[in-house]
Amino acid sequence: MKYRKKPVVVEAWQWTGGTAKDALDFCSDNGLPDWRVDTLKGKTGLIIPTLEGDRVASCGDYIIKGVHGEYYPCKPDIFEKTYEDAECKDLQR
Image (cartoon, rainbow, N blue to C red; front, side):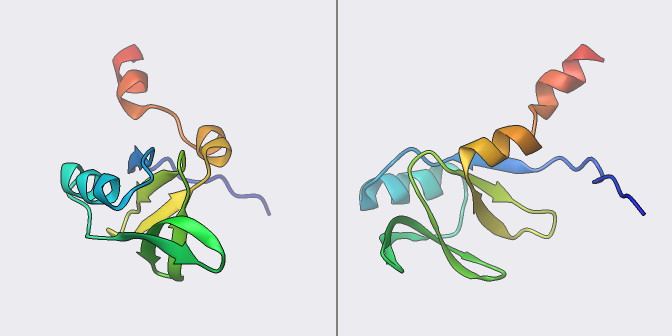
């Protein structure tokens, strides 16, 4: 059988900072939980607690708020292939 992913609108922000102050500002500006800039498994970036454990968001990654209020990082190339701007799409209808 084949299945199509249901269209779901999510909130997402692109992480473009690199310092602890950037992280605090980013989280505060977007109402996100207070995360940290640190190193995890040899990768430095914004450490995000996810349902699968802590994940690192590198500069340029998107932070997605899932349908259950969970957060997770997504690489830009995957994000652009998977998501489109829902507001622009709605305006075209």
